[in-house]
Image (tube, rainbow, N blue to C red; front, side, top):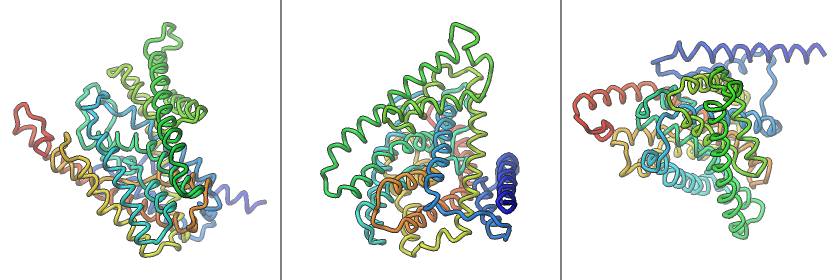
Length: 429
């Protein structure tokens, strides 16, 4: 009994260290090419290398726990992203987002599927699953490339940060139909599943995600800012934990009607933000959810480091590593560039948007979810090794480059703005 309790005490101590890192490091590392997730990754590696008795991490045997923990982290990050975006919704204003979703995301999934079949020799279902779970992007893991706190100006978000944040906010949900397609192929094979998939998994569930998100966002926005009774007008009481209530409410209601809760949470957040753009309560909501998001991300990346230190990549082959590197260094930059051609971003901004296709917590969630619903004909540990390696490299690569790249781009944007008269600076970048 004492051994079990001692182990629990150690886990509490490690969790406390992770929480302190989440609070201190963003300020210490500000303007340095070293991100909080990278620090937590190294911390997890160190902790699990030391002989201090931490429990082993195995996403295969602990699949359910991994699925639900990452699920919570994803929906909280989606609420944070939606509340932070200052740009009003619009087809032209959000054209960069639609390009990244409609062109870049689909091309990326297709290219990764082909690479998994060609390099790894995986069956179609497993190859499609790899493309689907690596489709979502995650700017939380390199905070310099996401939009900051909500402000009054609708033009405060530059094109790079807006495109990457809005892309991550929506592709976390739009990856679900692709994951369901991989599951359907694994279970049924052939193409008999295609009709039901198109009607239910694609159209109905996406539609319900958008609809419930809009309705929940409008209802909550009205209550927060314009309720007749002062007791219900929560904006006047400035309680930030209400953002958590909105997150869970939108997600739960959508999942109850079999919609995509990820889409609903992001749409809810954007709708609440649009209800009263200049009110300071937006900052309170975002500030609270951002702290929770940072804490959960720090813990999860700490565990990712422990997974690697504990031999989680033992099943990784050179072909699997090559597939992950191909995605990060070739496929995403190329498809990101193609998707942005003719869009709002200038040439240099297109290059930055294309490069920072960060893979993170969403990929871990989707893999845990899918492996609980079908057998894909490939050992689960091998798939985990490829996905874990890809996320690991992304944390390192993008965590080190985000600060200097964005700082240089900001300086160039400032110089371009000074040298132009009446033209958007992005056209010169």
